[in-house]
View 1 (cartoon, rainbow, N blue to C red):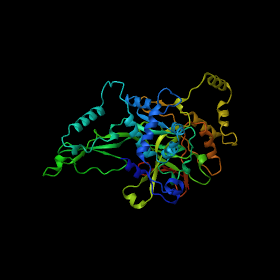
View 2 (tube, rainbow, N blue to C red):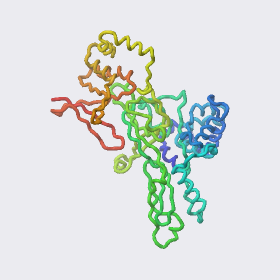
View 3 (tube, one colour):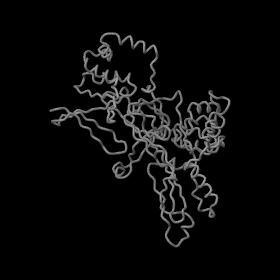
Length: 466
């Protein structure tokens, strides 16, 4: 399984990649991943952080995973740097992890499987996963023909946790524009704004096929977005029969699915050079990280930068060109959400004082971008946008949201963007779509184009009257 991970994550080296990777340019041998696994085992088994110096930090996490109190194994890059600073033979361990993060996720997972302690809590009620695992293990033990059990249960199917790399305090934050092809397979951290958040869907991780002729179960680990299902039953019963083999069917209940969500992240307006359009990047969020992002959130994302080859007819057109995406490892909110706001007694007292003053509405509107003269009505509209409306529910059950949206249209250089940039420093969440003026349509004010695809960007065009 590790070799297949390496093929998916390691790109073909060219001259620029050789310059960025001195180990490859020097012709050094491939690393010994068995020795790397021993390093991971030693780190998980012995490292103690400053929070709980009495016991190993990650052994405590593994005990919580065994007791089903935790579903993630969060490995901090800061802890790795602190651990590697003690011994000389671990000098390149952190850099190797950051440059080949996906391979080391599988190595840490195998190391965690070897160190997994026994559960100290008794399970009150078994779920469907426990019942299926017990039946599979019992069938594997009672198999008469050893060849029938060659397709054993994958390690991914037994795990109840996922491994994530968390960025350190000194981690360098990069712009989306600064992530290049040389960063393929590397662990990167960047800042952006979420412009589109998809629905949470199930993603198959281990496919289980059952033979209708002999009942033999075959488990196939899915490492990418597409896979070729097994077409022939490998059991000895079907191979020894004179009649053709039984047909294989996918058992969804016996397969393993994880939560999957696709997010579109766009670079911030202050990071866009003059005369350029904002660039965006697709982020794949899995497991417990799903539903942690919303449209308009400004976030720091740490993930693995990976290629995504085109499939189907697009692959014939693209040739050797591949798309890119980021597999999220950690998500940090940069702004406080509305639900997290708390008004203190002192703030309420100041609000009551301003309420008794004359023309509060006008004074608050003038405080928006005071360096821009005029535009009183537009500033009042932006003030109402910040405050929002009141959510109402009619007698027939129809709910009217109190959210307010605004559309600013005008000639270039009349401070549209400057006014919006001023209020986004206050608003916890915002989304500003880019509009393009087209004057060929004689009638109409606005047109929205939707393109089909998994995560195709939305195009908003403002059309002026002729």
